[in-house]
View: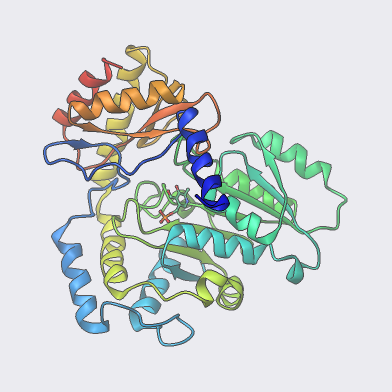
Length: 380
Ligand SMILES: Cc1ncc(COP(=O)(O)O)c(C=O)c1O
């Protein structure tokens, strides 16, 4: 084996020795109940969405054929963005092929020190998603991490740099994907405005599930011009892609400076056709949202009764924190053997010692599914 390949092999062996080796799971078995997906509203297989994808394909083709700045801009891309902006209460919006790409490209562009004239101060929640870290890394920006959801800690850090002339950016998720807890986005925006910071909020797990009409936790917060909201089309909307809702100025800036926008093929019309249909359905899915969140609450009560730790979850994402990677993987396997699919989440996705099963609830789950889950969790 050549030297380079030996390094890769050693890296895999080291992961295996720590119980952290990842493998692709087999495709879900028929009959299994799936708590491992992010299809929170059960939309991914809706015939209406499949039909909307086909219709968009008939009108615009299956592929966008180029980046938006070249051949890939269609009326569908523009109409969807106009709709996102209206529903998010922003001046403008921009869509991307994936949420990961959205965060990596937009955060890197927003933190660009050649544009800002200095390396910005980046205040980031300690548990932000990997794609947000990637954006910071691409910009070469050091993060000042505040304790998870701890706005007092954030305030102390902001005050510590009160006299600094450097530009400031705050990065957070609104619903945290691995813990299922929520940031106070209104309070974060007030803090950001008071300290002259740009606030960037990732609504990947809130889009579709929270907000008066389902458009996320920021929907009820009047957005400041310096707030940038990001979300995905890949979770509750059941499709794939990402979006930014922002001021016209920030959109124009990202169109020019976000590498993942400029140098990447525009999202497929198939995908956007289905995602726009899902987006339009959200205001009419209030009953599904209520049922989903009620079910999550009942699940937490039952878990506590069984002596299992669901952390600080207050949403449709409910972790069962087991501690070690070995115990977590064994529990996942036990459940899988009995037809219940859950995600096992280990470091580095979550901090050391907090390996967990992640239960993603869906409006498509039934009372029987929940009963089966609880019966099997009693074995772990
Ligand atoms: C908080 C958060 N942001 C962004 C992403 C990336 O989104 P996508 O899966 O659409 O690439 C994820 C994916 O899990 C996420 O949890």
